[in-house]
Image 1 (cartoon, helix red, strand yellow):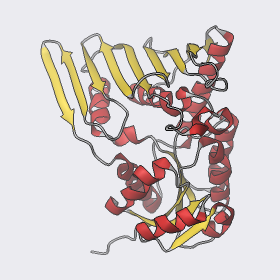
Image 2 (cartoon, helix red, strand yellow; image 1 turned 30 degrees about the vertical axis):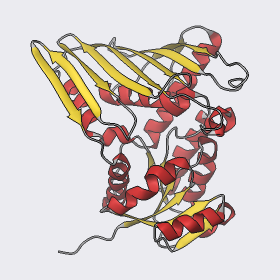
Image 3 (cartoon, helix red, strand yellow; image 1 turned 180 degrees about the vertical axis):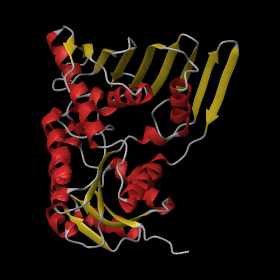
Length: 340
């Protein structure tokens, strides 16, 4: 049997998430190969290229040369969100498929431009929502969509991580680069995952932001809470903060049962699911797996088989519209209708 060639990827952006998770995942991939690295610091790119046995590496100012490399079929964009649009659009114009870290961009106008550029050039755009492939979330979605929990009344969800000066990434507090504060960095998981679980989009939102350290958090919020209203009556209560330790959960309440998943969103912790449907208790443990290789292989398979991919750029753009509405509601201190 002939084995199909693996899809060649260039990873653009060699910061924390790339070094901890994206680059290592290619060693476990059966459908993708790490073919090139692009970074602001070319010496770092060269060092990482040696570590991962990659022959092609480029400085940020040599990105066009990377895109001209015939071994590259796709780029994985792992830079801060403020740089996503320029990198993705340039790749699309060169005929390369794009897998982009979340949030899709720093501004909703940028994400719209990315979706249009990929559509115009006939290339795939995937938003890196790894929870769509992670077993505990897939099991939770099965419970909801098969009706085991009944009509979903409320979902409570949160994702927070303490932002520590000198330890945490400084650009996370720069709205031009990050797009916002913990909402765009962490809360986007709460928004996207609940939309995906329910297979619906919210129609309105109310939100509130806060900052205890107003000197450090002068450009972005320190914390935010929001209430999303869905067409079928389901309410999602969410929050995200840079003022609390790393923690996350999804708690689903339905007319027939309830389920709690915690931790819900980090990729390096065992997940525990508990719940009750009628009189039956539900308990499960989900081991740590490489969620990055799952999304990379799914994207490579879609490229190879010339089919659409979920979660695509349209879904990432919809989340940007929702995040924008959440910030608008917090700013105006009143409910905001969400228009897509």
